[in-house]
Image (cartoon, rainbow, N blue to C red):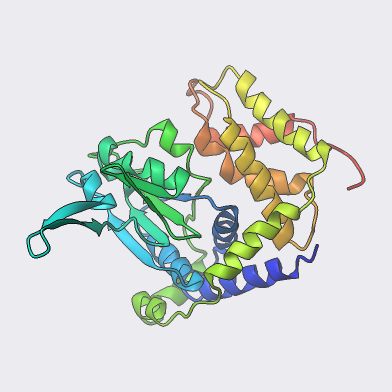
Length: 313
């Protein structure tokens, strides 16, 4: 298997996005991995750290139709999916598609909408389709939902239900920039002008081809068993109300394959699994004993506790 196309793809995406967001190479790489895995991304961080700008830059880099939705408490499901309206001229009902009908959808501050509106995303995230009045509408391929939420602004927000959290392939966090990078950002031209000038560096056909080819990355039985050991660790833990779902193990398997490919290997090693576990698993677990710091610390402890397969890969 030739992994050079994967490396070239990641290099182009990274270079384009880093014209906008400085010093966040790993976050950009994970967005590219999520795209090739066919999953969706939840970006959670403090206000003003560049979440929306990063997602805009990423959408511009992959050259797909892009829609941004500002989630608010008065947002209705039909505002997302679209509606059938009566056209008096033709005397027929016509469908007016909502903003979910795009290749890349940015759900900004998703936790500010009510659970009813949040649930409108469930079908489209899982099935890449929307059913309205008994009619099923397919989304374009590839299809990517990227959502943001601010963890410190809890007033007037509605926490995402576990069923919806589990549908996000990974949860990412950016954090503050390094001092030198932030000084450069302060003194450069307006970020919106930079994004408007970004040109696509790939196309949907290439993304779909790489997505299919990534399934040829070899995953040994020992690595597959290691992924199951991690899942069973969470399912047996008394610190958690529930362990990792089967959807979670599949997500870890797929992202490890793609991480190996973009790293120039046609086989997965334990380090691929460990790197992806830190972004694929934390949002899928719910800690019931608050003496334990948080889900990310739990994942780190799990990776230290579960035996790593030692073989000649």
